Image (cartoon, rainbow over all chains, first blue to last red; front, side, top):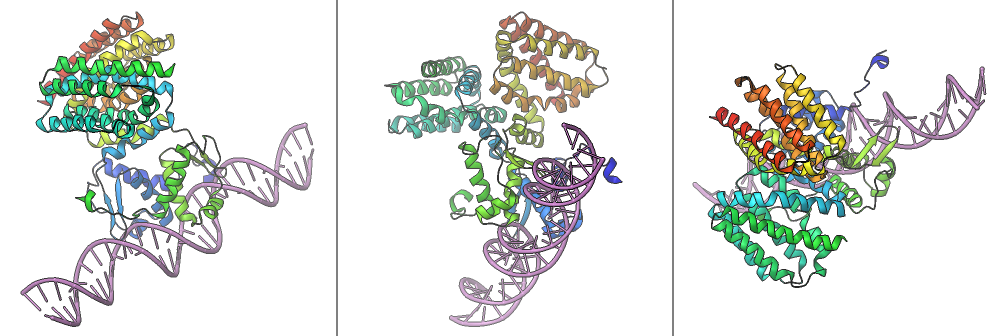
Length: 238
Length: 238
DNA sequence: GCATACAAAGTTATCATACCAAAATTTAAA
DNA sequence: TTTAAATTTTGGTATGATAACTTTGTATGC
């Protein structure tokens, strides 16, 4: 009889229920980071479920980065890492990658990044400067034929600018976008001659503006750099 | 340190290997969206593993939104939904929620949102306008004591502005931030008198600027609105 | 006293099997 | 042709056994 009036909207499986329960406990800080969870067998008894169901719940929590499972040792509540948090987003962009997405990414960068550069100029620490300077040097030294490494360095430079704002939300917002730059660059780089010198100069100008705490200049240089990028891609996308 | 001496060999469990294999196939479009995967039993034979190991891999893929599992029917490669992609990020922000995060979020909004409003004014469709208009009406009608609903409506309004840009990346970048607005607003709303009238007027001004395709005005109004928000929170955070 | 080696206990990882429940498919009846 | 029942397919759960790994304590040898 329970079958008749039973679950309608609840297509939830047992393992999903378990997952939610544990997730809620972590969200509400009832389970603090570092806490060791009871062993599988104990949890089975506590929830009154089989190991199969329990394990599938735990595996999903582990996949999402909420807990860490150490074979032979136990399961621990772990601090959700930024990388885990944005991994899904990276995958999403990776799967949606097409010319539309490229245009949209450039539009976003054109609007956001100059502002980011301005804030970075105001807030940058000496460590930020060191990191940026190293990126520039690496870029200059980089073998012009190694477009992969080049794209990687540029990626890091822009990410370091975002870091220099001291604003975690900025970093998180931009990181998934930057992670696509290498893939974008691979599309068009072969077509562009003498681009590298230009790129190095442009990035050095951004660096110097940030170094000198000249927010307006940083804004302008970053905007110019992305305008150039936009031109190149507009040409390519045609 | 962990990086340096961390495990070299395959600390990967069997189920993780399976997960990677299938994920790679999806990433490389060898498995297209909508494809029905072989049944669990068949996959067990193909991979030569037990059902347990296989299932744990499949459950994780399902948790990440890459496949959809239908009981009695089968498993299908599914299009990764935006909501799935940003869920982890929402959780991350939720767990990191503190006064620092609030400040950083407001800083990001102060910089990004006016620009978003400007672009929205240029690209908005009539449907966008209808949605925004409805948000304004709902906000005006909303019971002043129901702060939860109020915050929810405002959240939707800002999200709709982002949607009006026509740029998917904008939406995705801002959504996790907006999803925290209700929680933020709950902190301070009780302390503010006569705030609601102000809020309605401010949002209506933004709406009208977007309606009139007046980018500059939209920029200014949005900036003003967030400046006010900043003031309120600055007061609260002290 | 100290360091190494080893054994034991606890834990997760995997496997194999069985049965249950839901959905789709086939078959039989009206 | 339509409907309803039976069958098949498929995922969901349960259980028990074994393997692999980590930690810890203990014993051994120096």
